[in-house]
Image 1 (cartoon, rainbow, N blue to C red):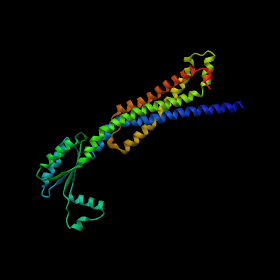
Image 2: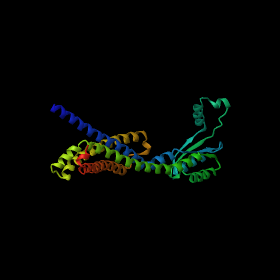
Image 3: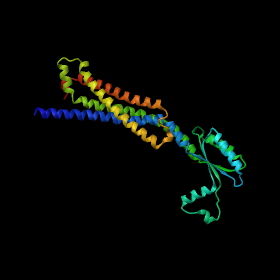
Image 4: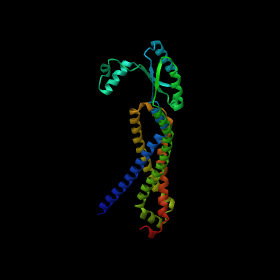
Length: 291
């Protein structure tokens, strides 16, 4: 019978520890994801900005030397990220694949024009700057038209700052929720040992002596939970870097090290503070209130 009770208590203890570690690791992992969003908000915004294409349609009588000079000027321009020349024959093939029909054979001629697709540097993707760039390019005599999605650029620029603000707000709210969740898990774990705490106090143990083993145990659990969260975060970060190499997530090592250190430190700090106040609560509680 005694062995059965001992095994039962050991299972309860392991289950309690497991729940604390799991809750800490899950909460810290989600906080790490939010931290990555905060640190890489500008990179994400720049990535989307640099996907916007400025298309330059050339006149049919444009000379090859003029087109080459234009491409060379784009290669030297500080506002250009990439430039791609698209002959009208290639454009016709792509368009025919999109609509599933050879429109050139149907019309008897190719109505499309030779074009250059420009992707701009993110710092130059704003309604005013793009309009200035488009107007400058349009002044060239061999340029027929400069086309870009003006409403999309205005929408993107207006939403980038708003998105960054909401990410910060969400991070602050989630940090508070995380502290409360971890605190609740630790308090529940200590609640099951409230009678042991009170018994030790009644036989003359000091509050510091009683608190110490609980703090040491829960800080170790906090460190374990933080390590599990960091492992999961590293795997997620590696997967994102493989899927979106253009974001260059590993290029800035210092912010990542700061984030990882903050998550690990937060796991220890929350565990320590929560355990301290949870044990203090039961130490100050009257015996008849334990029930």
